[in-house]
Length: 91
Image (cartoon, rainbow, N blue to C red):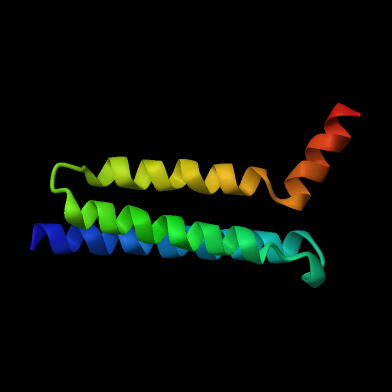
């Protein structure tokens, strides 16, 4: 039962983080520039982390959540609105 609850919490966190990423990108730019590739990479990365959590019992819930959070930040850094913001800060 504990493994099932931890997996459910991890899936909930991944879904909420992915939805937040999608909403932020949708509101930050025009509809034609929505990063579908980045969203797909985020979904596939979430599926991989969930499968690793189910396969390895020694993987803590906090480690899985932390690794997905860092992955989401890394994916978000390479989207067009963030790159444009960094360009304006540097120039």
